[in-house]
Image (cartoon, rainbow, N blue to C red; front, side):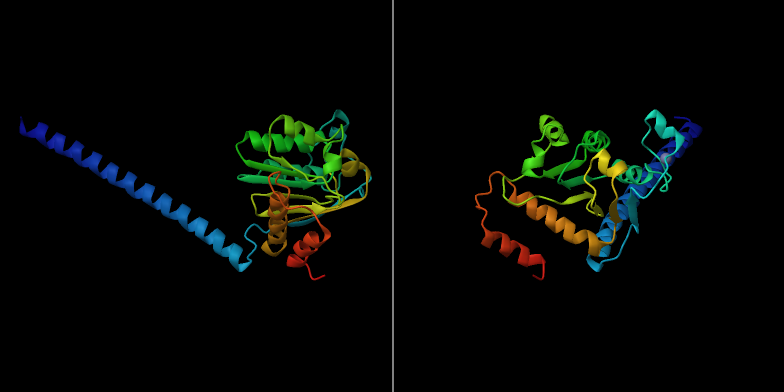
Length: 239
Ligand SMILES: [Zn+2]
């Protein structure tokens, strides 16, 4: 082999070797950063540090005007002073979910909420829904749609009302308040919703959702009694 061909081959081989080394190093760095980010997120949660810093109080029904675009049926709006703004704010948070959406809701009939939840499921996110046993079976309830789509839905036949109205997004943000997920609620009533990413606020909702999810498991053999309810409540409340 002529000497210059050998040199060229060595040069190419060397370049490929360096490129491979750079690739391997880069992959290792990306993995290390991902592991670090996960560890940092968990540590922040344990320390009660608000990583996302999304804390907002939404007022519904106080507004007296809506933008012209809504006349044509548009819902999305960045203006929190507009009647549609707070509703849009909540929908955006569901739309931006990356891992999970857990819904615990007394009444849900608004198609815009149902669509956002269905879209989250279609994006491959974990979606779980807890409803009230009476309201879940009403004709207008979106829970019927979720059941038809075979989403995980749980409710419990009970003398007690499942009156919660909260959504957990990615286990890091909670939206909770007086608002049922109805268009009347969002546009026609005086309502409030607190949106918070502060772990001290979010954590009790995570516990409450998981507690109800397990209680409402159709295979759960525990019968409902006042004593049982009392025991559960006293675990998390000073009553
Ligand atoms: Zn608007």
